[in-house]
Image 1 (cartoon, each protein chain N blue to C red):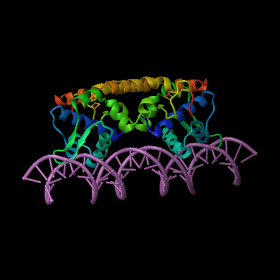
Image 2 (image 1 turned 90 degrees about the vertical axis):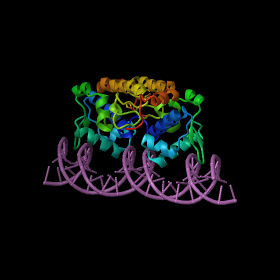
Image 3 (image 1 turned 60 degrees about the horizontal axis):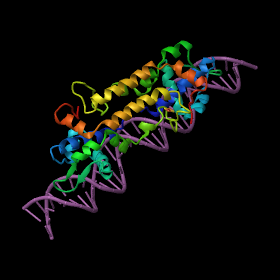
Image 4 (image 1 turned 30 degrees about the vertical axis):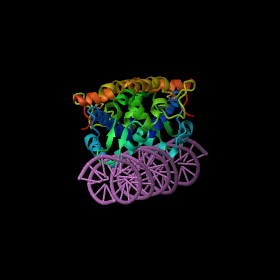
Length: 144
Length: 144
DNA sequence: CTTAATTAGGATAAATTTGTCCGAAATAAG
DNA sequence: CTTATTTCGGACAAATTTATCCTAATTAAG
Ligand code: FES
Ligand code: FES
């Protein structure tokens, strides 16, 4: 469904948000350890998310990653997936035709669009705050 | 969503089924031309589908691929996806945890399972006959 | 100012997926 | 029996994704 990069990106962002609930910055090392991802690869992903303003990064001692409380409400799962994997999963044809076009549909079009919309709606309506909270109260987990 | 191999496999199978509606066998070459896929790569995929009994193959002159009318009713989109991409998309965790477990859910579990089930249900309830028919009457297309 | 800690970024490597090539095996037809 | 046509199967190659390594830049603190 999502690329490895995207899975790591989502998990890292949720973890950053959770720590930010307690005003705590978190380092790359902690993140990789917590979510069970390769450190250097995770660095690349976070770099990209930081450049695009999805998370905030700070260099030097006491540096690390964080996220405003306000950002947690506005930032949706959708934004992370879109930033890392692009929009193909949201608008692309299920059978890989160049463009999904209801007027010239592929054989699965009618069956596929509903699922694509479900997914898009779910991702667009899920906030980071929501996910970070569930993790914070121990309802969910990032590793296994 | 699906791998390239799976996209090609689905399109090839639908085309084979459509031709079989008219008792016509189709060769690898025709299939690749019709669905716009690399011939040799498509051959690998069809080989695998044939070995697993999803389609029927015949060597020699007048050979090619075909599908019983009965098979078209029993064979679901699900079977093709499962044969090529495996079941990860149907049972796997959206964030890549080793096992999806409702008792130890990842942060997106509750939001994700519904979509996964929608997809699974759609694929399990869509027959090859249905897809082949839509193509046959010109309602849908395999290339663009 | 110096040091240590941290992210940024480029180069490279490994793994996986996608794609190609070529000869073998089967088989229909003359 | 010979030939032409087609799928089968193995080896290989290219492209993409995933992962690693190393150095530079930034910055907090003594
Ligand atoms: S054309 Fe294929 S999903 Fe719309
Ligand atoms: S545990 Fe992640 S989707 Fe179920």
